[in-house]
Each structure stands twice: as C-alpha cells, then as structure tokens.
Length: 220
Image 1 (cartoon, one colour):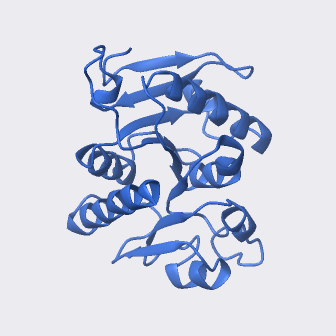
Image 2 (cartoon, rainbow, N blue to C red):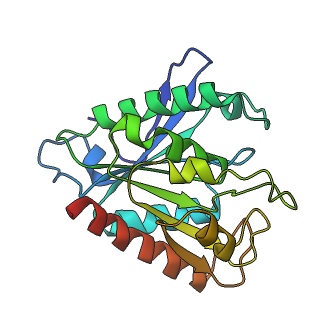
C-alpha cells in the first residue's frame, strides 16, 4: 500500500497523470480500517486539485471516514490550461479511478466527483465505472450567458444519485436553474458564492453536508 499524502504518477496514452491520495486507507499497513467509501475527484478545466471547494470537501470526507483520491489530468500535468477532448478526459479519469481502487486493500463503494469540468467527467463516467454516486462541485450547466448550450443531459444521464454544491450566484447556472433543468439531484446552494466558492463558513458547512450525503448514499 501507499502512504497517505502521496502523489502517484499514472501513465496514460495521453501522457502522465497524477493521483493525490488522502486518507488512512492508503496507509502502508494491513491494520488500516477500510474506508466508508473511496471518493475520486477531478479538477476544473483550467484549475488544479487544490481549489478551495475541492479541499473543503476532501477534509469533510476524511473526517467522515472516507478515502479521497484527487486527480490531475495529463494536460494540466503538462502545464496546459485548455482541456483535451471529452473522450480523452473520460478515458484518463477511468484509468485514475482504477489506480485509486487498486490502492485500497478491501473493495469499498466508489463515489466519483469533480469540480466544474471535472463534475461533467464524473457524471459521464459514473455508470461505466460502477460508482454508487456522483459528487458535483459547481456543475457548469451552461457557459455564462448561454443557457441555450445546456449540459443538463450529462448530469441527468449519470444513472446514480447525485449531490451538487452550487454557488447561489454561479453564472454557469444557478441552483434554481439547475433544479429546473435536472430534476433528481440533491442541490445545496452555497450562499453568496459564484462559480469558484471562497473558503469560509458557508463552504465548510456545504462540504460537511456533502460528506454526510456521501455516507448515506453508500449505505443505502
């Protein structure tokens, strides 16, 4: 097993990707208890795995007894800010999920998630990866000012329960817009937040609620 806090380099057909492991389930000891779930989280289009909302959710999930693996797609490892085509993103995410699963000793429920573009990848991939649930942070329902270019079908097609943390003032789609476009997911508005929530009590509380929902979803 690998020590928690490690960064693993994962070879993909599109270049090296990174997997950041958090949680005692990754500890190099057979006595480490199995986590409640393995949660694999992707980053935003031009962002990284240390965005404030990703870290807030990670911390809440660790407190709840989950193992967390944060992913870095090959184009971000290479320093590029423009995402590669959808098929490449989804294929790399699947490889990273498989690697994360291989580093947890016992089979545990899988939850896939991500921030913004990473949430789209997770929703598209959930069923094929056998995930129990999707955890979406700032799901980009549409480009700002372009509600006609909806991505609602990606979240609606996840095929598993979904929890969305959405800034109340998100220009990529407000919680109200999202609820109208995609009936079904549990949507928690973050008061005062836009597409990139800042650290603070509102984000901490939202992350805690997300972690509680993850535990309920994997126990049902």
